Image (cartoon, rainbow, N blue to C red):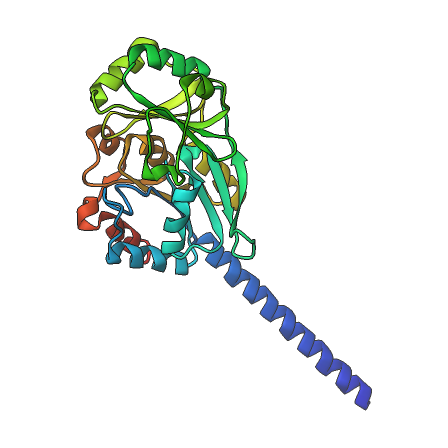
Length: 297
């Protein structure tokens, strides 16, 4: 055998070994990807308590699930600017987030100047629903997130979930805006009053949910946390049985039924618990941390 033949055999053996290594690495990558979960997390009442505080056990558990490579996705009624600090707090640098109850979807990318880009906004004409609600709930306060991310409000209505200071406007200006999200609040009414008003009006052409207090969230028709998450699931090619969601509010019901494993917080209302597959501890007992730790076993 010539010297060149020996060299040629060595090259082939080396190339074969490289190909085998590549195949094994690709198999390992595919196996790892197949074991990744899509984990949708509500914020208020789930990751943070009603004072906006996130406990150390919850923060560390969330950070560990992110570090393990799972697709952790914040899914909240909060607007963009109120969501970003939570994303940073649990260490999501690249991924996705759902804000405004599904009205806004973000792609998170640490290489971008802002750290994110807006993938989608679902807008609607708020005029008909605002007129109907104003007739039924004349003393309520109204706020609207417009297509540019501004908040317009009546009666000096402000809330931390807006993420920006609302601009006081008259009701007519609000009627003429293009909305991503409408919020209605009344200190003089109960959630039952809101439900009665909605039943009487027969809201159509929008999606709505009533909060813990007399708080009503309104989005475009068919737009929920679940609808936005399903779009992202397809984008990420995650199989349906590898989805997890944790939440506590009525605006989480669709998300909990969407997930293969829907977990309600211990303090959630009965109808939220009824929609879930299981119940964890309350937000005051770090219920979210218990769920997140279970994903790492």
